[in-house]
Length: 77
Image 1 (cartoon, helix red, strand yellow):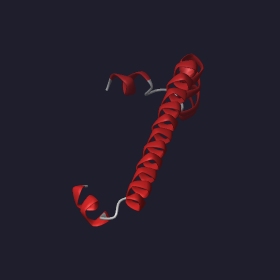
Image 2 (tube, rainbow, N blue to C red):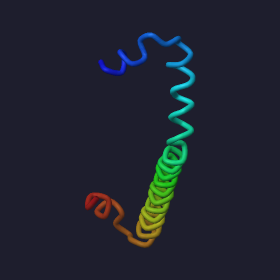
Image 3 (cartoon, rainbow, N blue to C red):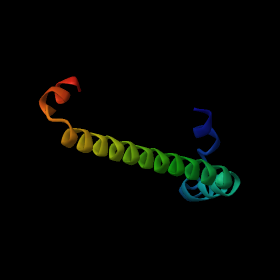
């Protein structure tokens, strides 16, 4: 509630334009670093999931074609 008291007598454009611009100017590098880290982490997680899915697909494909009883190997999963 203290924040509303500080900004109470100011015009709307100070609250909605000037304050966010100042915050982005001051903390812009920190925000960009955090967003870049999150995007990088998400990309790495997606790459890892795709690689793991590819390995699982290849293993199931080649083990299923080489074994004669594929129904018993599927029940193990």
